[in-house]
Image 1 (cartoon, rainbow, N blue to C red):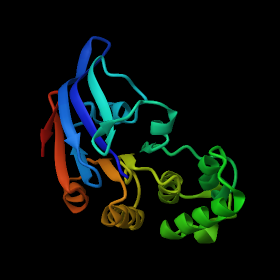
Image 2 (image 1 turned 60 degrees about the vertical axis):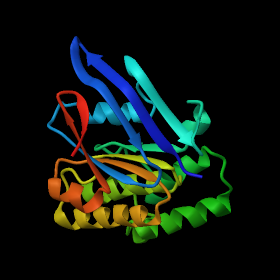
Image 3 (image 1 turned 135 degrees about the horizontal axis):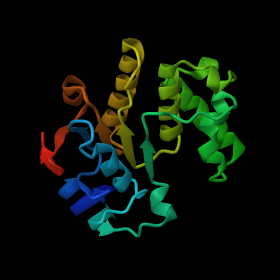
Image 4 (image 1 turned 90 degrees about the vertical axis):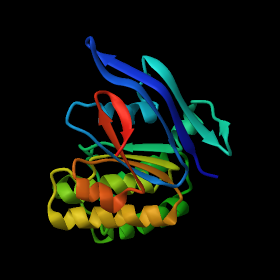
Length: 217
């Protein structure tokens, strides 16, 4: 059972400046949406609202399963994952970084080992599982962040510029990982990018934030 997301009349203002204005959209279960817009247009704010980390000034954020709205509680929040551009890395091994979210959910040790190693293989970091995560390159740290998100098996993945400030090799690896998730269709993905070519490569549907409004791209 996956999740769909409905935004209805979302408004958000910071310091008297209206960032989002009457944003409404239905994000269908299992599709990948590429979200574009100029700097400062509210893309990251919209992702945080979708992740239930910020509350809109007006409007409604509704997650639905089998067309039934869900309460915005901890159980729902654990079905969502937001990956920010700056990946926070713990001063421990690559393995322990990825395992952390499973440990706090009281997943059994054997299951943790299985899931973490499987995800590290997907992102190409299995050979670095025992290395200190702080020693990873920027591109590898981005892949680590993606692994930490994926290992939780979220039903909605919110990716804020997942390939920003990294080299072409790591960009291609991360795009390949996103295409794999997209092909599996197990999660609804909302991806923020400044690269129109990347948006076209990865998105089932393209969206644009312009003058505070959410528009078809």
